[in-house]
Image (tube, rainbow, N blue to C red):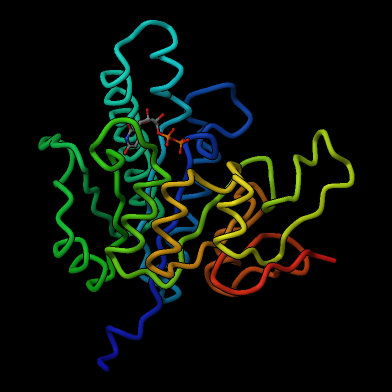
Length: 252
Ligand code: UDP
């Protein structure tokens, strides 16, 4: 095995919500810059890193279609929103000293490369951070599916799902169920059966299960959470949830 093959590689999902910080929508520059700084630090510490960027802070297809927009068109608008976020993150990563390539599932040739798997792999091997924008390029799904697909096709060791407002997957919504307990480990099958939407879309989860891609859910708002999760691994006694083929285990 070559040295290149043994370099750790992760795909990180950054939702639109995590870019909006405490704002109601849009991009909060402090949150953006902090996420960019952490991504660059992970790369500098030897981890190949692909990032799948969400768009929910700017546009959500489902909501727009409820307001009367044709559903497929609304989803395409959502995908364009992920490109806007990606451009903001690209510049913030460069400002933090990282080398980055933005690759889109939709053709927007003036601002990004088109996503080509083998080219993305080459960028990663050369130490570049790869921002995957434009979702999957298809309507009716979300960037969770894009994250699962990119994680699998880029042969990531794990898919990191940075969440806003929760530090893991719980047995029930802790906001309404004070006795809810956090899963430290969660089996894919159980997550699917229990329809744990907080984790990711069922179709995306099924893809991860089929291809044995471990998922780590963590709170992206915790200071330095990306760096500590990527470099040290999640401290599942304290926070976070790891989803894989293993046995389900409650925290505490
Ligand atoms: N979207 C889509 N296909 C994709 C990815 C995203 O149609 O492959 C649309 C969908 O309408 C979604 C919007 O883009 O609501 C923004 O993405 P998402 O909601 O996943 O962003 P996040 O919640 O991660 O911020």
